[in-house]
Image (cartoon, rainbow, N blue to C red; front, side, top):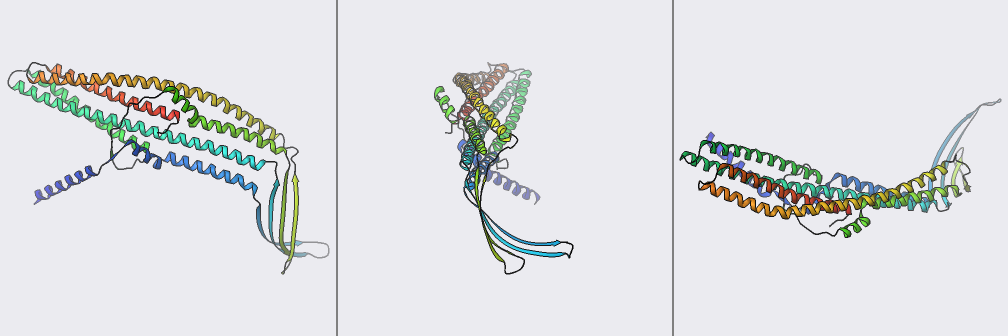
Length: 418
């Protein structure tokens, strides 16, 4: 009875694993990017910052509208004098309206300043999105590379098992010495260790991809094998980068905001004309007496301890800072893209060379195993062929990874979204 229960339990576990394997999602690179854009907390935080700066434009526009206040009051007062103490009380209800009539363009300039800061924040948000997309791509190709390394490790393991079986067979019939079996056993142990390492690297790569997507607790999934070898024009990418690089564009709007700040501060020297109207009721007892006032006021700043003067100088210094920073970033972008194109060319050449080398290593392994099967090869020959095949395969997929990650870096630097 107990054995039957264990048998049923094992069947259920196997069915569960089969269903789980059938339901394992396979995500493309674009699927991973789409999830990251919706779920990554850095992007969500950046969007919230953009929204905050958008509302600041509305706050600046409020200067065009009146301020309306309703005041309800009750006052109890006691006063002593030489004759007798006096008590008094007063009730009041008042509705007041204050309107800026003319401020020499301060409000309009404040709106312009907030719009420029908002545009700067939009470009900073785009930089966050581009960085996140790059992180996803880098992690995605790391998973692809780790998968290929695991496939290679499995193939080397199977070949090592085959080699050991042949060595044992030859030893049993007296065609090979014991050392051949020993070498094959050592090679098999190394192959097992290589597979353990490859599996650990693959698990870590998948975890890094989930982190880049911002969904670390997402259930396990697989990825499609997507990689491309594409041609790019260096000068065209440089032109795109000058127009679209988010960091450069954000600096430009920050510089313009500094210029607007300076112009806004200069208007602090101008007078401001305000109008106030109030209507209400006041008396010591009910019914209350009606009361209204109209008040026109012009305020002219005369001296503020040179505060405005120093603020204007700060704004000028900010403008100079952003101008120099803009030139610096342009040079950095040009340098980065030129270096990345050198790396891209190198990776492309490695891929073409390693394709041929990998084909030769595969043929060499098949030849070594074939020679060993018929008894004319040696274990050293097989082991060397296995090592060469594994190294060449690893180098090839490293080159594919380098090419695609470098391509993604070029896209990020240029501010280019496909």
